[in-house]
Image (cartoon, rainbow, N blue to C red; front, side, top):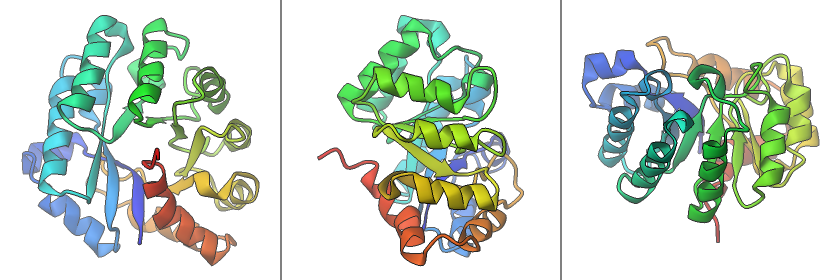
Length: 248
């Protein structure tokens, strides 16, 4: 089984398909991907339209249960409004988790409202995915520091540090509540991550969806052609994504 833990419902998909995931799912089927953690894109660049995009993600998931796991977002700059939207997404929309892009959304990980969100995520048992690997707000070491403040919250480094800060991602993932998604590093970095990070906290993702361009084949083949043992590849591709949601 393959689960893509980093995909987006890009604006191009919404503009063309108007909330119908059938063509999106056809691409997943082509690559034999059973399900995906689906993040927005509009909600990461438009504060005013973020709730609307969260609704869209939840509706997509209703049309494809067990195939689409929606990840909403909110904007800490809104203060108590951000907290209300977080709770709405969990209680009313039943989202799987949250995605934050501090670099693109323009907030610091030391923001006091974001601290409240991180605490709530631990209480409500929903993971937080991050864009990571980009200065100045989205470095793995910053997320690692955040994880040390909120040990009950599960944090996912959505890019494993990208091409430049994957070493810092390895260090951040020494914390037991930090997971790492192989979506950005080069092949040798992937191999070293798989050697040095706990095998039950590694995920894989394609970052596919902001455009119609199919990025899955490249990302998947890059991972499959590494020297990562096949049993560990199976764990990363299929078992760990479900374990992320298991808080029992």
